[in-house]
Image: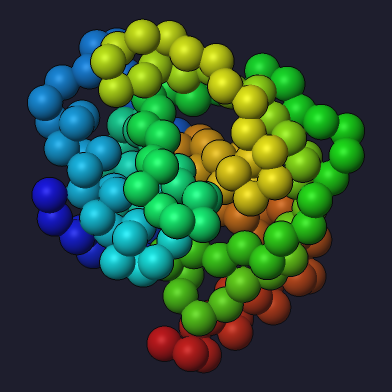
Length: 164
């Protein structure tokens, strides 16, 4: 288990959809462990494999207050989203120093392969739901600021570049 360096925007891997996981390997399990270590070091509430340059559909999420309740997911797919939205100030270590308030569904139902290779379905609410959606965006080659208007997105990226 190792804290990995997060690749920086505009690295093309952040815009690349990750490959499906047909069967879990020891390497996939190592990626999950590295994602957890990296997430905890930030600290954050989730990470997608693209963020550390691994183009596999692997994410981890832990939005618990006490920590230690990590959910490992391969090939996560949102099956249902609530109509009710929730605002949250989102950020990414891939574009450090900036954040933006994003509206996302307050609850989602997700199907994914768990750490044992079983297909599982789980409901996520509040910060858990926000984090799951944010991480799925990452493995789909999308960043949180893609949910902003073009003007706001351009301003955010410009501010981040100034801070570097």
